[in-house]
Image (cartoon, rainbow, N blue to C red):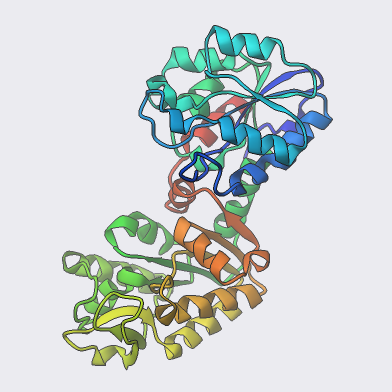
Amino acid sequence: MELKTIKTLDIQGKKVLVRVDFNVPLDEQGKVADDTRIVATLPTIEYLLDKGAKVILMSHLGRPKGKVVEKLRLSDVARRLGELLGTNVSKVDDCIGPEAAKAVESLKQGEVLLLENLRFHPEEEKNDPEFARGLASLADLYVNDAFGTAHRAQASTHGVIRFAPVAAGGPLLMAELDALDKALAKPARPLLAIVAGSKVSTKLELLSSLVGKVDQLIVGGGIANTFIAAEGHGVGKSLVENDLLDTARKIEADAKARGAEIPLPTDVVVAPAFAADAPATIKAVDAVGADDMILDIGPQTAAQYAELIAKAGTVVWNGPVGVFEFDAFGKGTEALAKAIASSKAFSIAGGGDTLAAVDKYGIAKEVSYISTGGGAFLEFLEGKTLPAVAALEARGQ
C-alpha cells in the first residue's frame, strides 16, 4: 500500500494531529474501565514525543449524537493516559474553534494535548468539509492511527486528509493493514477461516467473500445451524434462518466448485433451554430432537476442526463456535482456541466476542495478530474499501 508513515516524516518541533481510538468502556463513575485501547497507542505517542513533536490527540467516545454529553467527556481518558505516559496530558473542552486553537498554540515541544470528544459536533459523523478543514488547521501534519474507525468516512478519519498539509498512517494502522494483507492477500496455505455468529444474514457478505479465498471455512454458532438445516438435518429449537437455507446451499456449492471445503459438525452439544445451568447433552448431528437447542459443537467435531487448524498455514478467526459464556457450552470454542494457540500457522483474530474468547482461554500471546478493529476488521475481510485508508492512499500517490 502506498501510504506515508510517520517513520518517513520529519516531525521535530512539528504539531502532529493524531486520530486515535480512545472509545473505551467507562464505569458508572465515568472512569476508564478498560484501558487496552489507550495502552495500544503508547508506542506511537512515545515515538512522537521522543522525536520532539507537539502531540495533539483526537478521538470519539460513545454515541453522543452531535451534542455535549457530560458523561462522555474525555477527561478521565486524559488522566489515565497521563498516568500511563508518566507525564501530564492537558485537555481542552472542545476539539475545534478558538479554545482548541489557543490550547494548541500554547503547546510546547514534547507535550501532549487531548481534544474533546469529536462526536459532540454533528459535523464529525457528517464528514463536513469545514469541520474537517478546522481540524486540519490545528497541525502541521495529520496521522491516522485508529484502524477501528477506518471504515467510517468521517471528518476526523477521511475529510481531514484532504486539508492536512501532510497525511500519514500511524504504526497501529499500518500493523493492522500488514497483518490483514498477510492473512488474505498473501496467505500461507492452506488458508482456513472460522466464521461464527448468531445469524447468516449478519455475516452473509463475509461468508460470500471468504468462500472465494479460503481452502476451508468453518462455520459456527447459529450460522452453523442454518448450514446444518440446509443439509436436511433437524435443528430442533435452535436459532436458525430458514429463509436462508438456499443461500447456505449456494455458499457450499461455490466452495465446492473451487475445491474449498465447508466441514459441518458431526456431533453437537444440545440443551432444552438457553441457560448457563441447562443440562448439556452430546448428540450426533442427525439425532437432534424437536425440543433440543444446539449450543456448541461436540467433541468429535472439535477434534476434527483442531486437526484442520494444525495443518493450516493461515487461520482467520471471527466468532466463537458455541455459547462460550456458559462453561458447559464453551468446550468447542476452547478446543479451537487451544488449537490456534499451538498451531504454527499465522493467525489473526478479530471481533468483540472473539477477543473475549481469546481473553477467557488465555491465548493472546499465542495468536499472531489480534485485531481491535471491530467493524473495520469485518469490512476488510468482506473485501470492502475502507474510506480512511483509501484517502491516505490517494494522498500518498
